[in-house]
Amino acid sequence: MLELLWTHISSGSQNPSRKISVKTSGQHLPPQLQAHKVPDTIFSLHFCTISMAFSAAFYTCSRPSLILSCRTHKPNFSQTSCFRRTLTVRASTTLDYSKLSVDDKASAPSKTNSWQWKFKDSSINIYYEEYEKEREGPCKNILMIPTISDVSTVEEWRAVATNIVQQVGNINWRAIIVDWPGLGYSDRPKMEYTADVMEKFLVDFINSADGPLSGSENDLVVFGGGHAATLTIRAAKRGAVKPKAIAAIAPTWAGPLPIVFGRDSSMETRYGLLRGTLRAPALGWMMYNMLVSNEKSIESQYKSHVYSNPDNVTPGIIESRYALTKRKGARYAPAAFLTGLLDAVQSREEFLELFADMANKKIPVVVVFTKGSPKRSKAEMEALREAKGVSKFVEVPGALLPQEEYPAMVAEELYQFLQENFESKD
Image 1 (cartoon, rainbow, N blue to C red):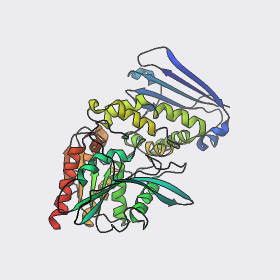
Image 2: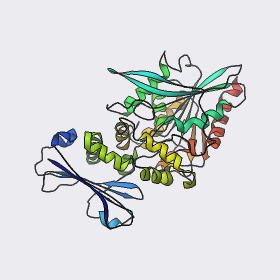
Image 3: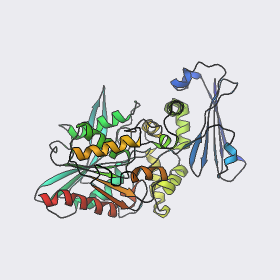
Image 4: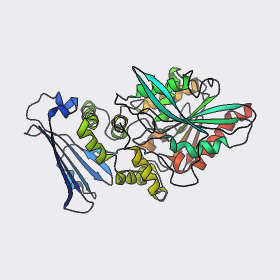
């Protein structure tokens, strides 16, 4: 039998306010734990929210069971000093964005629709939105791709899309915002989400004869946030997509755990255990609800590293993001992102090589750097300053989601980039 103990302690309190004890049979364990052959072993995940950062550690003991404990408390490093190696888990490096907090930011799309992605033996419903203003003259397409996170969705790009399509110039711009499979308002089937799977989706969506971008091979521009930018550039490097320009907004390449703890074999094993646990039927939902599907957690993350100004985080944002975490199948893609399966590259050197190849392909790339990003993510963005293949490097306020927190500033920089590379040529 598997015994799980969850203890929740209110911040600053020494008395447990909630205890949940659940017993379940070994068949509900993730495959990694079912297959473990070492007798008398206990795998323990110790999750502590310290300023809403989560710590996890695995260790052995003399009893064959799995114990999970969760505590919410103020920083007190002595409480975790007994663990030989601690994982600090941030449930997301960016969070998502339904119903913008500032009422005048979001605007209704011209059209909402869905596209059926044929993947292996499945047909996955993909949600997307279209933005355009009816005018005479030539039209070009922009694909806007959300930052990958546990609550990623199209809504982060709405204000930028509305701003750009309303600009009056020599070219009329049409914007498409699409939700990733497993995230946002797209279907979230239980499948293996990897960087290769996400890249294949992106390639299929752009190149599909029955998709919203059909016929746009010669005029497509791609805007991507976080991992989305890196996956787009990787696909362009392979020649699988051929955008005329790319905007990388607060680009990232490492998931929350790998960017902090690296990728040695012992850590990869622990990531696999955590990922398998999050995907497990009963235990997975319990852990996901505690770590991710939690309004306090979402609020803390937004205020600490998703937005740069905590005053921009309103109850409306938190409510809408929380709602996304309750969608059917919500935990599968975030489990992959958290543990590094959606990372397009494995090192900074590979990250820089991707951008360098854009110079060889003569694809202009603008990098939008944010001054308030977390230290490690900021260092990876900073490495792109004056890097080969980066034709323009601009700075805006914000952290990991500037396109939503400061949409007017981001739209201004992106529209100027479009003018420099297209308006003057047409």
